[in-house]
Amino acid sequence: MSQGTRQLREVFRPVGSKRTEGMSVRLRDFYSPNTEETSANVTSAKEDEVIAAVENAAAILPAWSSVNLEQSAPVMFEDG
Image (cartoon, rainbow, N blue to C red; front, side, top):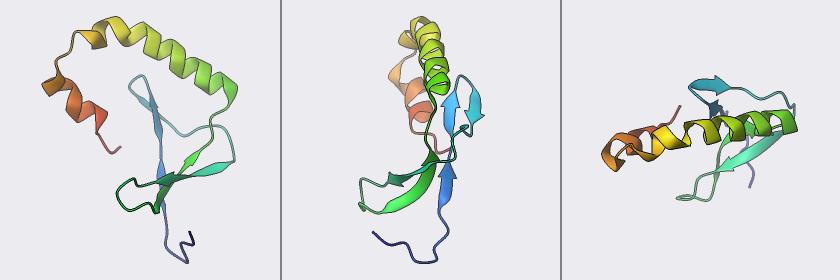
């Protein structure tokens, strides 16, 4: 789908409590499921970035599992 001259925002991946910009120069389209249009761009993750994210997620899982839905929902749907 063509975006013309519309400026797309860039989406950052959170790893831990930090926003990461990614080391790759390849951009991927980020689609809105509501409109099926490209709403942003996100950089592709390199292997070491994926490993770091998975390790971080595994380390925080025990604490995150005890958080109730009311507390976790705003974090999960944060547009950061």
